[in-house]
Image 1: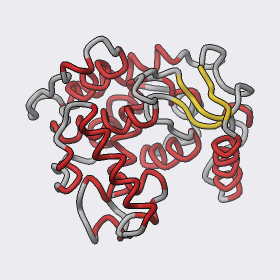
Image 2: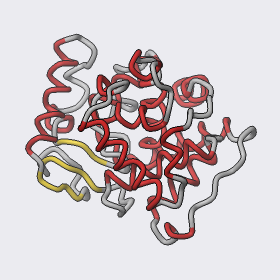
Image 3: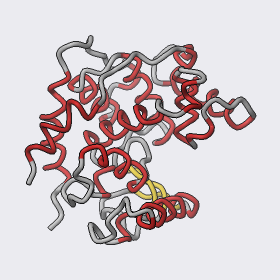
Image 4: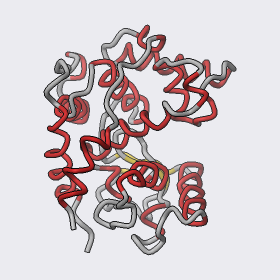
Length: 251
């Protein structure tokens, strides 16, 4: 039986609190007040102890991916395979990307095809950051040693705000290990990597448009667009906080 997303969120929320003591709490920009998803990003990030620049990045990224709505139930792809309450905008390309990710990871032996029905993985992308389930869940939870646990590897968990924030934090952390990021350690370069990791370190029409969109999103969400040129504040490995509390408490 599928573990309800709300239960996963409650467990994850308790775990993230462990990182909250050292960082200055971020505040919700006044222009985003009343947008529940934006409020959740700030609240969850504060419980995670994220620095303010990380929160600004997450708000800008979600602004772009949700069209400024910050609705965690939004998705792109097809309704088949997605949660019934998800609001899926049709996108053949997004669904195809999700399907390729599942096929590739199963072929590599990194994703157990028996965890959940294939349709649950390949509907497309969803949640506050338009995450493709196979791409983010496998990369993040391989670190935990529990990538074969269906309670952890629920493809629909990308629609849960707490899980989505955690996955986004870890995805940033993993992108920072790429050579392309190390050649230019800025938020703008990291943002390029969300579209395609190999875009990091490149300067062309595509990456310039990406960074410009990021600057515009920072402005729209009440942050300084010059953040794109700044180096991210270092944070601990997300798994050092999460692993013993989430993964150690599940059986």
